[in-house]
Length: 209
Image (cartoon, rainbow, N blue to C red; front, side):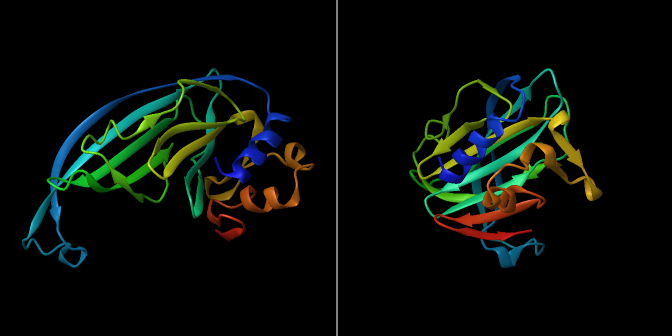
C-alpha cells in the first residue's frame, strides 16, 4: 500500500470514531463489441472487436451513512478521488476489461466508489480475468484504509468515513471536519483536503483539482 495512504489512515484512526463496515458483492461477466480504434467512435464503421468484461459489484454496509476516499495504487502513481456525499450502503465496484482471443495478455483494471470513478490502469492478465483479481477482506471499519481488490501491479483501496465526520460544501463536495484534521501533518491536509481528485507520484505530490 502507498506510504501516504498508510499515514493518512493512521491519522484518521486517531480522530474518527470506529464503526464496523461489512463489504459484500458478486462477480458478473459479459461480452460486448466496440470500435477497434478511438477515431472510429460515432462512425458506425468497421472493424469492431469483442471485449470481455468482468465486474464485481458490492456495497459498504454500516449503521451510519458513508462517504469516502477511493485510491488506485500503482508502482508509479497514486490516483485518488472523493465519493459523493454520505449515503446508506454506498456502492463499490471493480471491473476488468480485455479483448477476447488475446488472453493471457493486457487488460485494464478500473474501480469506483459511490459515484466516483478512478482512472483505469493496464496490467498483465491471466486467461481467467476473475482469477487474476484478488479481493480483500469482507469487513473493515471507518477511518481505516481497506484493500478492496488487487491485480498484478495495481490495487484499489478505500477509506470510508461516516457522515458525522464530514462537512459538505458547494457543489456537493465534502471535506473532513477541520476540528478533526487540525493536527494532521501539512502535507496530508494539502493532498487530501479540499480537493475532489488528484494524482501523486511515488515520492512527491502531483496535481490536485
